[in-house]
Image (cartoon, rainbow, N blue to C red; front, side, top):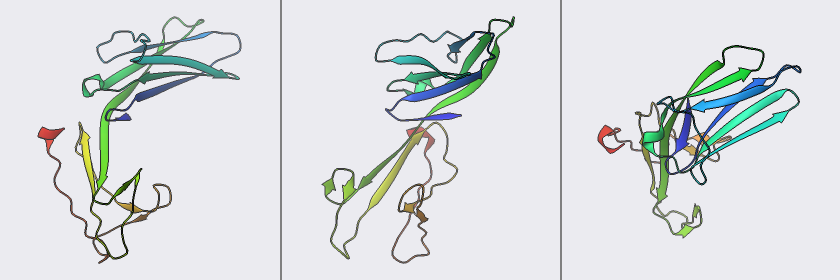
Length: 163
């Protein structure tokens, strides 16, 4: 499945490797089976190609929860009777980070020894399986645990009524 950030864009990609002698068309359908059509500031559909790899990308701008679901990408080669159908699940997820320190853009600066409260609030259609805090970056971060006396980590249960 593909996840979109709350208030962000939902993006789906469909690829086809095209033989030299044929043409390929992409058709996207929403969860209701209706064909997706590009609409200014709402839905954009782009097709790109590099050598024989053709890609169709759909972007749902400012995605809302009700736009989630199973989308279908139909790939039709001109020499075939029926399209090949691929399904992807698009769902809306969000993790908003707030902190108690003075704001400096996306950063918080505090005095040495001062306390900083960082809160991650999740909004989505599914209960998250796990929450992990990292110190550093998402690609090279060290997991924080409540075993380290420097950090106090508390987690409250996912409330389905607030999704």
